[in-house]
Length: 249
Image 1 (cartoon, one colour):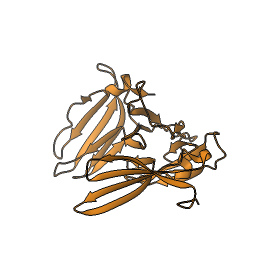
Image 2 (cartoon, rainbow, N blue to C red):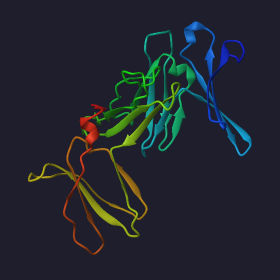
Image 3 (cartoon, helix red, strand yellow):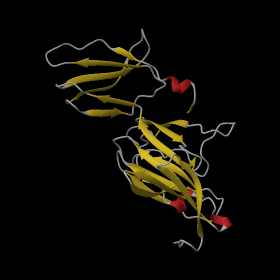
Image 4 (cartoon, rainbow, N blue to C red):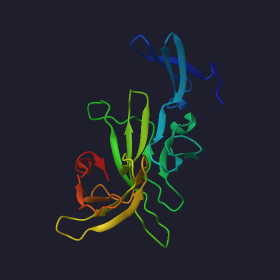
């Protein structure tokens, strides 16, 4: 482990207003200058709050756990590693894995690993400004008995010039805010053509469920059934325009 004062030096990255300051600790040794520790200093009701985080954070906004595989990119001698990320949790990636590793994600051992994401450089446009990048990831169950799709969004953005946030979000989320249980159905297809059922289930009051088997490139339809009533007609869910704009498939 590097010791403070030996190979790390503080660097004032900037001051945001009066109540917030950002420090970046970076190693003095040239071979490790991609390692950075972010120090957030906030003034809250007269009390100083100091938070130490790495330059990369992975946020899981789904109800699934994920394995995070850090593969060396070959730029420097470096060991990789695998970490687990629980549902609705975030992980500050260990500093030594940020410097010279790429990130792959996987829901379970049955699913495919994602393509590698480079962690060292925040996403920028041609003018050097912060520019979020979004990927559509299909983990797809690759077991012999089934090849069910598992779609999700992977979003990378940079809140400032030093940090990278990688956010995992579901494709479709249904929340029942009614005071009674409902049945629902989800299908895909085109208008005038046979609809292919994707899911038919019930949801309790206050419950939230996610669906990862519907691609945003497909036309989805949604119907509900209240207790003691007939099924509604299927209504088309608005297509996700991001598929045709800034999404890398």
